[in-house]
Length: 399
Image (tube, rainbow, N blue to C red):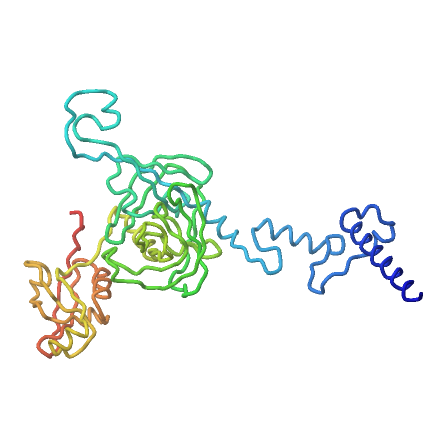
């Protein structure tokens, strides 16, 4: 008998608790007032309620206004993204492509699609650019505007403006444009030399023409060279997604400072595989300053064809060192030829600056002032030879 009563009591209590839990979850207003006012248990690390900590709520509101993270365990890069997106523009270009057969007869409809009957047609392309000056200077890639007949820039606020080319530098794949709009939001140049592998970066651009897009990744490597992309290479490598249309866009740190100009990707499919390259902001700034001041970039030149010393070459020719650059060719009548430089000489020093490979050789010589006489140190037949060379001006690759 007692056992039966105990079972009935236990079942009744279970049913009542289940009903109370269901009401508390679905219809808390049906519960007595005292039960509604009872505070719910909280974890020690839970944030204070607004009514308990109004000062904390105000701080949280300010943080949201600045685009910072507001929740424990949440990381946001919205501040840097907001600053960068305001200064990154979309670039639309059109150009006339000549070639093909003349149309056999003059038809307006056919001419609309195939050109003017002389094998000409209009093509359009898109890319990105970065506003680097409030008075309208825009940095982008040279290949974005190469050969363009008309260039239009779309600002983040929807404003459209025609742009003109101030100058280009194909050897670093950079170009400087200008639009007749003032008081623009400009990106601050960051210190790319202080960047480290593993730093978080954001890539901003207009991939595939879908509209302005921000992607996030890290710096995967620094000082990438000998990729065959540009003559002068010192790329920042990143795994932030960079796709067609991102060219000329910004690579920024989490505070929105410009670290590089996105320029190329490694891909077998045309899409991002997590290997993208950006021109460091320091290089972009130097090129831009020269272009703005003179309309072109002036570099030193001596007229030699260099080649890296590989372990195989060093062993085959019993070279005394594995650092330096071998002179594989000398341009007839050039500065090096007039100074007596020979094929097979190994360049090891330029004006006191050591040369370890062809990349450092090109960089060091490019920084020399044309017209200056500089001492070049070579290894020739096992002995050191110092040759004074009057530096020339590097010709334009499109000359």
